[in-house]
Length: 35
Image 1 (cartoon, rainbow, N blue to C red):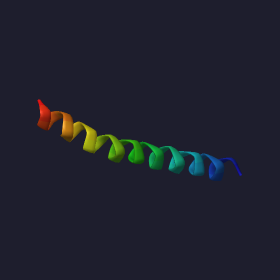
Image 2 (cartoon, rainbow, N blue to C red):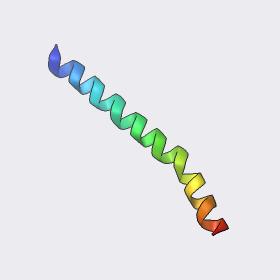
Image 3 (tube, helix red, strand yellow):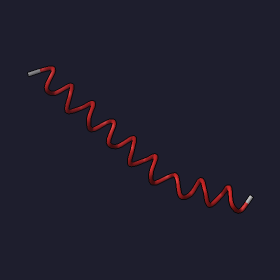
């Protein structure tokens, strides 16, 4: 039960990190273009 929960937690952390990365990418490129 514990490894499954840990796996779910890990997958959720990875997906949220990827979402944050992809959401901050356009802002980064936009700021780089402005500067």
